Image (tube, rainbow, N blue to C red; front, side, top):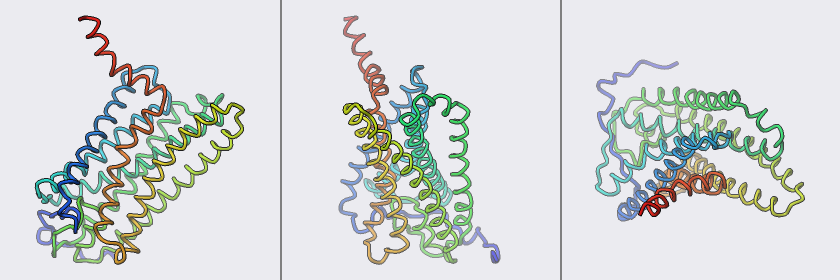
Length: 323
């Protein structure tokens, strides 16, 4: 039973107020500086990757297409929350409209769902490239890549649309103060006058299924990669492959661990884990990956690194020659 419809003209607040990080107000200025630096790094790094891949006709392998899309998703994910966080931490401006709050929530969770799908696609790409190098182009055709990209996007939309509908139709007739630095789903849902359990349960089960399936498949891909790598006769090739894959695994571990720990703590450990720790975990989950991805996936990929270097050096080289 869905129950009677709510009167949104009365029970829907015009504005929510974000607290920032409860208990760490004295550190807000330092957090604002740190977030600004990380956000700038994420914007510049991901923008450079997108520009280089789009401009260079030699970077048309599937991995570079996935990297380009990942960079765009990272910019969307970081831009959805960081400017608002910096505003809260630096100036104390914490109000956000009802519509903006749920728009932010939708983009944040949809972007994270797309990102985990892209990480899986990139792991599959590396698996095919290392385990089946002679069949790489015949397996990862443009049609297959398009199908993977569309599937990843549709999955994110299917996951997020019911969740957004459920929480946006809850009545908010009490406090409008969100104890968080952005419109995180659980933090907003707990302010509702009605039982938020259906949306919270949907979020927990949906996140567990999406992330759990992706992690299992990513782990299987890297197990196959390791088997192939240890079969190589060249120690140099073995070391280079292990170094690259190891850095990928570290970034993925940071992304998935911080995200899932944040989700499960809000359910199971909310009374034992300090609130500021919960909020910091959620914030780092959205800020650290967009900052590190351009470095780990971009600068550690030799072909892309050389193209970025030539793009940055060429203007200075031409100017020195003309002078």
